[in-house]
View 1 (tube, rainbow, N blue to C red):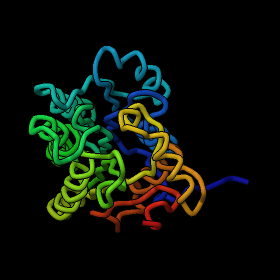
View 2: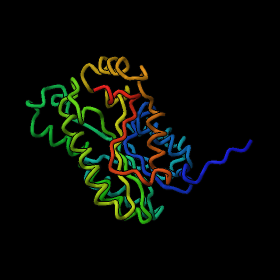
View 3: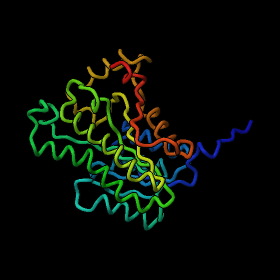
View 4: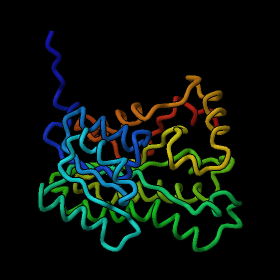
Length: 261
């Protein structure tokens, strides 16, 4: 029997950017695989030469048409990626921001004790870089599009050991709402995706993260943790025409953990 995928459930002919793949355990990797499985052509970034050896084989698997370094703290690197997309494709249909960072000494301490410099760095890398991404994507999304960023439940509830990233992710989710309102008239939708705890390289920097994961699995209605594949396919769906009526929200992909409180 031939399976027919409705046009609203495909990304065939769509062009997308994925920022933040570090390795094959990354949430961004789960999303990139789902985008590609639904037919999208991808541009993929890597952080630096050290990270390139881990990301390049994954970019080959994705048949990425553009593969460029992007350090959002580097002068002009993010804009250079969008310039490259403009030159090669002349358009962009969706972009994923899966980037976050806070200095360890600020992340592991109390929020009240965090340094000004650490807070500014966490906000710049984890939040303002998403705003910059939206600014560069806007002129390429001539027929509308979708922008995605990754949040966490700690944006709305106090989570032990999440520290300064809680206020930073709260700012990120507020930015999603404002960007959705500003870009909506151009048909550009903006989404925050909030996965449950997943053991990624970035998450390993959070103190007692294994304990956090165990608690989440115990409390989640499904009694388990979410996978990067599940996060990926939810995100990919939101990039399709079938999700054109959704924007500005935080979508939880956490096996129900966020409803428990």
